[in-house]
Length: 301
Image 1 (spheres, one colour):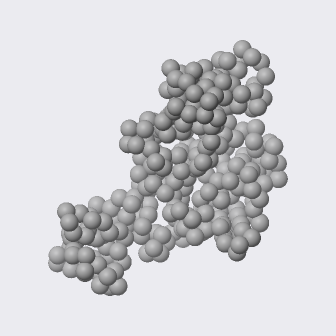
Image 2 (tube, rainbow, N blue to C red):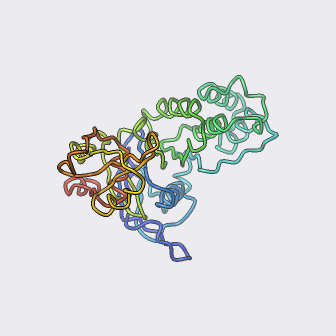
Image 3 (cartoon, rainbow, N blue to C red):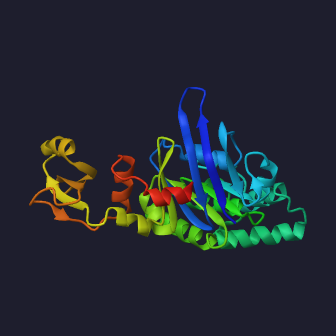
């Protein structure tokens, strides 16, 4: 099974063009949708989750027309939105049991078994009697995944799941996503580059509503192999370098400014070569320095 998106567009009433002819094929496994805030990620996720309408385009999940047969999609969909609310005074076990009933698991014994198994899978079983209001941010996100897994979904969508989590909880959440993303489609929408580099075998970069780049992260890095250079500069020099060179990223380092530059050859004798990573590729792409190779673009569309 795969998810095929073709020429999907959405404009809001205020004139914002959130999606512009987005075309994408998403296979089984973990798929990373990477883009800055406001890029169109959440609009795309809500559309795929049948929560809003598109202006035009098509989406097929296997043989299911996602835009026309929403009830069929919801039977095989698990969704963890960016803002996942819980009833603070209800226990994890009771709320997950309620969600299981809403999902159509009518047999009480089966429902108990499913809830118990999912709480075990998300490492929440020992906390099952605790009120959700006492959960940490990471525990709430893991509970969100537990409810998304109800009904053995074929497609799971998680929108900005690790934003605000501490490093330890992010590792737990990454491990959980990796475990569930073997035999189903899991779409991870995020602006955190390391989430995609750690978890996903396929990815896409979206910016200003347009799909900019898609493919295997390892293979995509060959687009900038041998083309990233670094240098430490003073803050006052930054604007001059920005005007003259293609800066992929800048950050403070040891009281100075570290710049990475995209260039086919060394920009100067004081620059050092860098082994590029996904962060370099991401920033080079959203700044318009890198474009989808023609052959790969044809495969996507």
